Image (tube, rainbow, N blue to C red):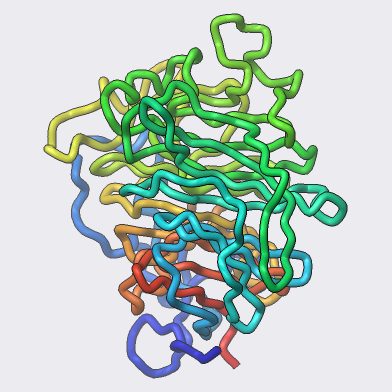
Length: 415
């Protein structure tokens, strides 16, 4: 385990960048301490004719953290790692997307043999083994939950399974049970979503995508399909009785919300509300606050365009369809998300941290009253795609880089 770098924004020597404190510390300004109030420096928008629905919906003021950050490399050699979860003893579970392998990593970076007993995955392109989470009753059951692209007779689909973890010298999962299968099955290697979030009531949110191909895209707002949805299930896969569509015979009862493109980032805030960051096309990545039964509009409304430059959306707004709290154009390609609540970085209290793939950055958002008032790009010096970010038990941030020689990094205040 070795220090990788001291995070700086202006030079290769250690310095403290100055900017705002988070609103939780009483600063209502989106910038300060030398910030000029302009947005984070990025390229021009892909769709400049699209205008935000309200002030601050995009290109919030740039901010920088007051705290100098030390980045320590704990481990490397992961093949395109995707997710990280902490065990009670502070060891970590780390998934490898294309290989379908799960590892247990010690606090000092030692990696176990691959955990045996997991089902095979379709690891092509965006497919493979994705998220992993501990069950809410892990202390008693030792159950872990994971998402993966399941090979099927007519294609593949996002599947959620659970199993009992044995974490000895030869770690394994047994009594594996599939609790959810995305339907319908399609032949696609993209956009299946895959994040898992357990709510305080024990129910499980699963984020899904619309599979990228047109056959899937047109189902994103169709309640008879799982594609482009967030679903809410019990830990055994059954449907909670208070889901919004349980009485609708033409809808799949697992559905919580609809109209999403591809959700790879999700987290609960201090009030147990679900937030997501989802992939847009060329332009139009979104931060959304999720409420049951709402339609978030994809592909009818949005702020992006086809990769060819052709239009996608009918408009940017429409009655009955939800507006994003914030959007990015050009995109960050969000994957992984945590809302900070630790003690190591007091100025970050309540701030959102989102992994950026195409932006090769850890994106920090400062919010006030459910509106974004500041944005910062961290870890840009690494030049690496950031796949996952998780707050550790002690308040450090742990990050996975999306590389063939993927790294597990730990962010702490510089000493």
